[in-house]
Amino acid sequence: MKKYSFQDDKLVETLRNFICMLQNDLNDQLDSVYIYGSALYNDLCPGYGDLDFLVIVRNNLDESTVSTLISRRSELKLGEYGTYASMLEGAFLPISMITAGEEGVALWWGSRSERIWETNQLDQFTLYAIKHEGICIHGNFDRKLLPEIGCDEIRGFISQFISSMKLHGKGGRLHSIDWLLLTSKFICWLREGRILSKSQAADWGIANIESSWTKHLKRSKELRKEPHKQNLNEYSEWLMDLEIVIQEACKDLELQLEKGPNFL
View (tube, rainbow, N blue to C red):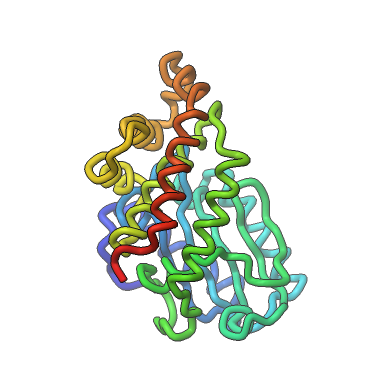
């Protein structure tokens, strides 16, 4: 594996071992491996976030390979291969599912379980981020292999996010803070066309969004970095009262979406 700008030696070791595992389990099926998300910004948060990847395979996964990969995931989640290995989350997608949008057999390693996909279910913003920010750590890096996601598609995704936020944007759980962090992240993209990690989005929102809900971004970032604090009374009570703040953020995101991207 080539050396990348990852600052954490344990992360580099985890990715090296991950590639060796994939070569052993997938053999000639393995085309390329991409890393995206928090790892690229040295912003991984054990106990909260994930180590995001996309594995591109040459053909649809067969039943035996799916079974092998699910068993392998169970081993990794036990933590015996290190904390970062237990955080691996992502998709194994055949090339035809990505380039031609064909149906097939793919696999998703999710936070809660593994699922077989018949179509590519990665959202538009994730595909956009992989294409523009992702790092290929194995195989030939070919941006043309990844679909071109236009601004209108991203705006459509953000519109869906707003609808979901209106219905489900409530407090009470640790990951309720994601509503605020992602709102700041999407407003930054709409204004500047930049993709930020969630911690960067917290800092950017505090500095650039003039709205009362942004004062909660500091604590959101803190909880993301130190999730054990959710058990402290001051943090648990704060989380319980977060729904009003989340809905205020939702209104700001909706207004920004109506204005359209500023960077075009």
